[in-house]
Image 1 (cartoon, rainbow, N blue to C red):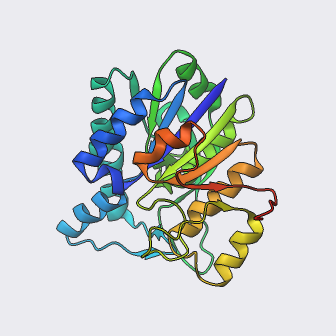
Image 2: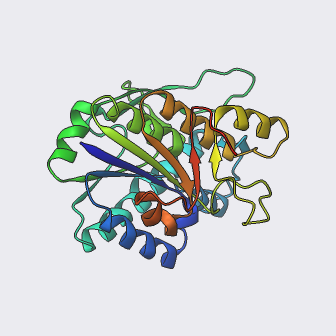
Length: 266
């Protein structure tokens, strides 16, 4: 079975017109699919309104107890159910899930190694036996970035990591493509110049771009997850703007393709 895993973040969720456009595009994608979402922009805004300022390290959120409460309410509640409702209005039979539902995504609290990330989860296992029947039954799972440790503790987990883990787990028995939608046309040489898109990136090029600090901050975990997914059986990884998702699905570039193998630029 051919599957599509699509991840969106606050750059889509936080803007009603962009979200409506995305819902229309996503609803028309043929075949079984999974939507994964974050929502860090909205979570940060809610936290700031309560006097809790976000703290980030290399694109990852430090999650204390108060922050965990906020991201759980925003991700698993407000955003997730809003997405499900919008998809249902587009005749997509969506179901919203956290990692705790059906023991879908089990994580462990990230160990402290120089930086204490707090209640942040590192994914250990995806329950494919729970997820696959939903897809086979025509359901479209909408997954948020809250996982659990099976000991009663919820954990904030990077949404890109959730998308990658779900994609690689399903790739053991299916052909899986992974799409990361974010606020740029693709990976850029100059983040201020939308025309400086890098159409293809492999591991060697990625290493050089990191050394030169062309790729930094939140793009690092995104590309780390992309390469991890390719190494575990995912067919293709794409990074680009949500409005170009339909083009990417049809095999047109319209963004950055991540490749594990070497290729000849010329």
